[in-house]
Amino acid sequence: MKKIYYYFVIAMEGIMIISTLINVIFCLITYKIDIFITSIYLVFVPINRFLNSNNYFELLLLLFFIGITIVFYIFSAKEILNKKIEKTPFIILNAIWIYMSGICLMFLNSNEAKVILNLNPIFVSISAVSIIGLIILKWSDLNKLYRNKPVPDYEDPLPENFQLKAKSYKQIKRTALGTPVISIGVFLFNLLLVYINSENSVLITFRNLMYGFSIFLELIILFGTIHDCKEFQKITGEKVPKKDFLRKLNAIQIVSIVLFVLSFFVLNMI
Image (cartoon, rainbow, N blue to C red; front, side, top):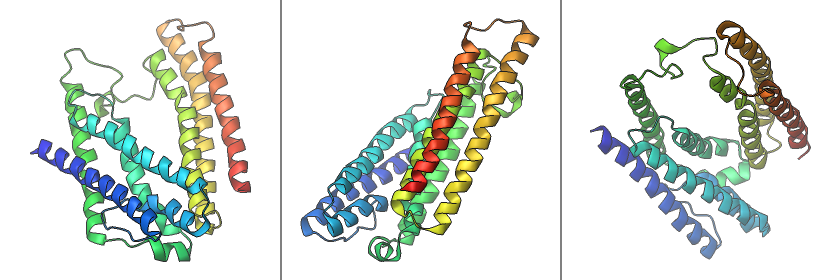
């Protein structure tokens, strides 16, 4: 039954992508926006702007949006159907992208909203709920996979194995490298929000709060990396993998934070 549900979710998004591609071709041929209810709506923002401005940069953004949609879909489908996989980043990325594609359109300017927000609440609701169900079921599969391991993994994410203290240098490194991941992810998301509407006061406030929270989180990770590395070495007596292990991690984190702060000012100048 679970496998049937997985195929249902994969098929539904596949229909959305095929529908979107056909819809894009239709709009470019007819030179007007007429959106199918099964299409991914964010894709039609650059199309609408291209039809109004003949700015070919919008077509590049269109190809970029379509490319992201297809890549996330293919790799997430592989993760969904692979029972032995232990990490599912593309399922999460795909879910975020699909939800963003709908939520971001709420902040379009009034003229664009009238053209693009031709939403069918029934289909949109089914799509949203089905993705939530997928994430819950896949998380259940991952928990079973970890519990059935012949050799316990003391770095697994099961609730009973959760600890505040670091469990290995590998884990410390993985956490530290979360800083550039957060920086890139938040920057790209805010860049999308700027593209959607750079003058919306709600979005501006949201972007500022997101940047502020992210910088605060990155500083916690930076100082936490230093503390965890020294504490782990003190408790276990285990030497660091490399002499400059901590210094390199801190350098990556500091550079990421500095560039992240600079990106905030760049976005606010657009």
